[in-house]
Image (cartoon, rainbow, N blue to C red):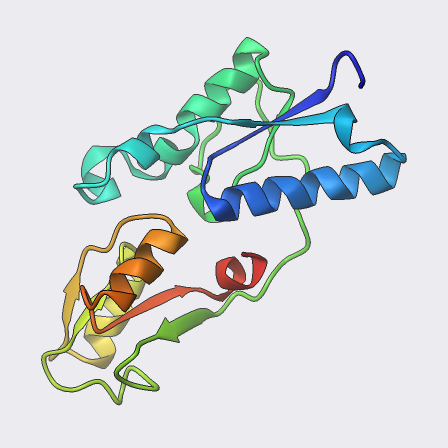
Length: 179
């Protein structure tokens, strides 16, 4: 085993880990390094801990990156893997975005056990989303639908949908595919 593996910081969600593993695998292939040349370091973020309020009320997108950025600055990790959607518009001094995984599907995916499309949902259906963009789009297309805050990682949202907490949701096709 290599004595000083390259430490890749990421959140602990299945999607974040899938992206960190893809990053590690691509670095292994590009540099002909063994898996033990890398260590994936899971960092719990404020966004992971705060689930009872909309992100806009508690600090926005930076809640999913702050602790990971601190680990980079402190030298506890060597690089970080984030979903671009979680990145704030301004980075702390000394940090840069320097590499990206290949672009995935940019579309939203509609998921519902009750309907094939948003249009097919019954009047008064409940759709969950934590995205302000998606909430606005849903309300514009279907003002009769109730849109509720729908926080949690991808698995949590899929579980809530299966349990009937909402009638439908919109999720990033990229995340569903990567996972």
